[in-house]
View 1 (cartoon, rainbow, N blue to C red):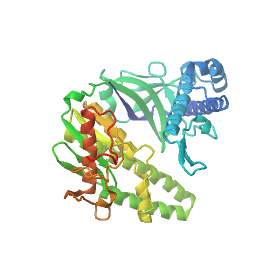
View 2 (view 1 turned 90 degrees about the horizontal axis):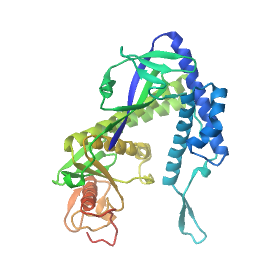
View 3 (view 1 turned 60 degrees about the vertical axis):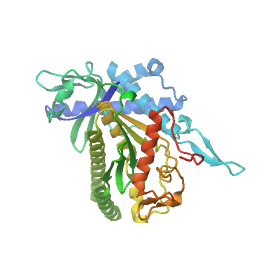
View 4 (view 1 turned 90 degrees about the vertical axis):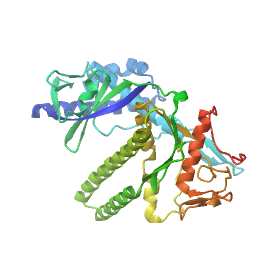
Length: 403
């Protein structure tokens, strides 16, 4: 299988004269994306690149002064964004009550959009070989509207991706906080996960008290504490509240800066958690997670000062990082239905939500089974993974089951 990764490189411009052409190219590219997005919105969402090319190519070249490959890249950038939004809309259907009071759902599509997608951040997508390349002296050549410019990487951590084992693709030029970055798409062929060679089945329950509780086939539970993350986020929340109350221009600048800092910190935490799990279990491991798509975390019974943390931790990002790291070592991530995983007794199979004590984080069953509630959920998730290995295509728990 192909393993994809975005290689992020901070770059410095060779001279002040390189700043203006790169900035101009990024702004023209952004405006061209808005232009194509408006056309797609006005013409019933055609997302075929070749069809759009026949209609818009010449206008992109003349109106925005884009070079040939850049014009094609604009079409690909915009259609990819619309396809991503289409997938997101499909995953969150519209729910309503009919005249009989029954809940119904209706699948959303792009026609539900009120406005065309806007590209507010300047960017520039460059195709390798045509628009960007690595020189022998280690510098990077980038194409702009008028000429090519030379930029230099700040660090050398990226050199391993140029050893011939990775296939490099489109590079995206971005700027943030006065610094310049190059995000390069890279893919590498890795061994496929072999279900028959599975050495470990690990159920992973995600939460806030423990960001992850992992239970394996040997009966061992690994807890990854969320206390540090919770305290850190509460400090950011208090600081953000003070700055919002102040409301000055300088406070708004600081607010924007700390939001970016908090997001970077959360991403680093999720990277660390995913790597910890993969390093612990290694290759040929089946990691089993609940499919939380469309799940709303209830806040009605959560104290007000904890509701922000309840709904804002990026669990999906942790899932993405774990999927990537697992694939890199020949392991696999399986998503299963979350029904009753926190209410079911993993020993006798009884489903009763009253047996879970949320206040004391304990699960106590009438059969005598007692465990931490996160551990019990991880055990149930792990058992679903075992069922999948045994041949059940979509394992899940229902109230009709006795075990």
